[in-house]
Length: 545
Ligand SMILES: Nc1nc2c(ncn2[C@@H]2O[C@H](COP(=O)(O)OP(=O)(O)OP(=O)(O)O)[C@@H](O)[C@H]2O)c(=O)[nH]1
Ligand SMILES: [Ca+2]
Image 1: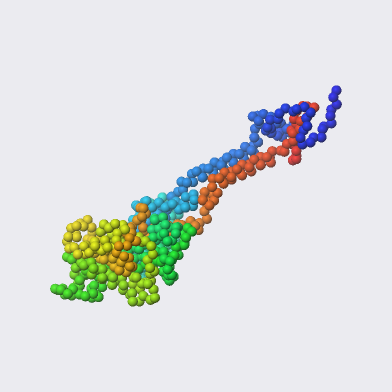
Image 2: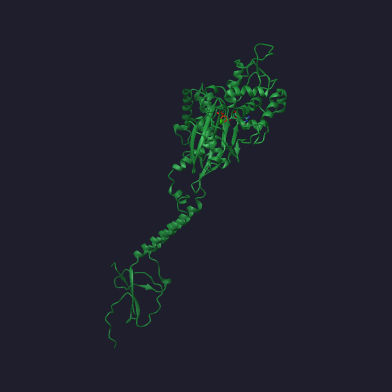
């Protein structure tokens, strides 16, 4: 009879004398009872994972699912909204802007919705005598805005009212009264509003915003400053000039805008009273104040020649003119319409050079205001565009083309012009002799742009993006807000600078590893010995009891 061998000291690796059967990978399941040797199945098919492994692998796969769902479907970011109310001199208009923030934290604006703006007349400045009446005009605009923004998003949709030259022309107390009435309405509009978001913006800001939208539309915003395009805007009450200049500029005219990796040193100024409607009104008043020579052959009482109105024009009784100038611009009976382009151009130039003698040691192309030498190309918008469109000029027309068209129009008889342009409102038709002469006096005689220079493009939009300063203001605000904003963890994960899908897989792998090590930890450390006497493997737990 074979003697029982004392239990052999077992080293870590059993040294069987006979070849043990091939061990299959062991799936081990410990049993609670003390005597039982550990049950183990060589046949992995019979082994069942412990509850911990099961639970953790569920958690891990859910995490993976969650990440992939968010990653795959987060591209459908929700559309967000912003509202800007432009308080212009001839009217007030609401703009509802749509945008989303894509995964690379880039703002994606959707400007195709031209229907997202509405204008009401007259402008805010017409409510000087009755500021509280402004609620009617704003009420209509807010009703329009609420229809454009889903109700659940009203509370997060910021609304700003930014007034321009119309209010700038009023004294400050009246401006404040009208703005306070606007705030009362905006506070209860349902949109997100702070009092300081209703204000009169400076002309310089207005110009900068117009420059931003122009270069955003041209794709030059965020690129080399020397590749940007300047903006020159002829509004109703004011004219803005904004462009990148490498010249020294007094701080009053200098604006520095940081966008992407570039800083743009801009000259920006708004010439109040130089808008088309106000300039036209001022010219008529100057004619009557006898600043220019009276009509030599006037048959009746003192009459003054008006070279900026086609001959044969006689004012109708109620003279409804354009915009806020309407209240004041009754065509005076002392004026005798005698259209003459070059005389109108000289009268306009005198208007533009008023105060030039006060120009100190700067360049003063317009009035007594500093302006560096024009640099680069320009987009000429608003009344520049409407005038060039009326005369059917090319976008990059020469000023000489405008001059010829103006000479012909001013010299034409009013009755013929009315017959030729029947679809046009008489008040609008009446302005094109003056506007053609005024633009040549401004761009050529004052700013020095050559008559055959192609630097000027007459436009009011680029690639269906309207060149509206309100758009530029919105682009600047939303970009600044995004840069300053703590992006939430979702955006962090999916934004360009943060982990991409690869890192998510890494995160999930870490989760899986954690899951596995927990399950390992729960799993007893096992020792396997081959018992020669019994001729089988014995698996026993080591370490923790
Ligand atoms: N001919 C023509 N002129 C227009 C048209 N739309 C606007 N304007 C004129 O273009 C100028 C500027 O338009 P807006 O900026 O809307 O006017 P506004 O904001 O009230 O005027 P500002 O306060 O000076 O900017 C004004 O003189 C308007 O009368 C148009 O469709 N045709
Ligand atoms: Ca305007």
